[in-house]
Length: 231
Image (cartoon, rainbow, N blue to C red; front, side, top):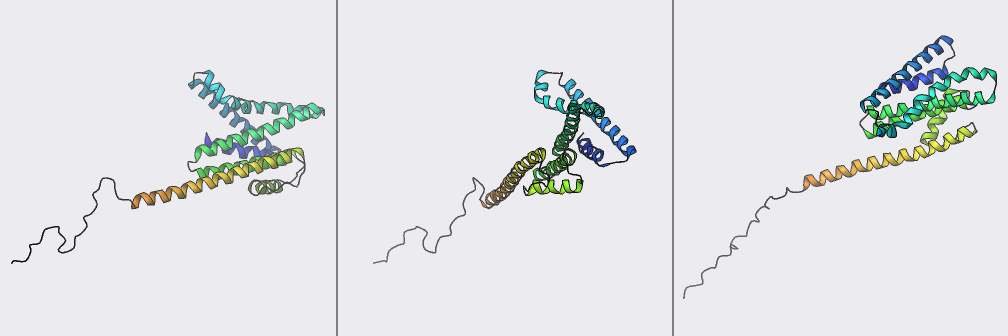
């Protein structure tokens, strides 16, 4: 399931970028297939947990992300040019991208055991998801510019060219994330070097319980009493 979460993120990205109707239809079908697999996997975990109350308390947020794709059906109502339907369509697109980003980051964390590798993979997923939000829900019309500015905002904290409410929220969120990333990276590297110094110190210490080597005595300093001169 970990690989499917990462692939699903790129499927959602493809739905935003393709303009060919055939490719758009194929990616939409693929997205619904992935969504059905995720729902079946969630229901299977609930069945294994015997639908206990504790399971729903720990995984209630996943239900929200699984229900968000149903809002796509209301996009057809956007043709009526009613404001509430247009906002609902934007909410459905926002929820779909956010759901794919969350699932992709969780999948990256499960697939990688190294903390630094997991941090790099999750950062890449965050950049992809944030760039999709910037491209889909703001006046930004170039995805290359969107992913470039998103990467800079994640690494350096720089702002976006587009100055909308969503862009400002993304900017602040990515700036906070970048601080957390560098703090985690510094802590991981510091712990690594401290652990290395500790292992070197332990290697140079003598084993416990071992007797210290005898100190060689000087000639004539054996502690015996010398006989005095004969009278």
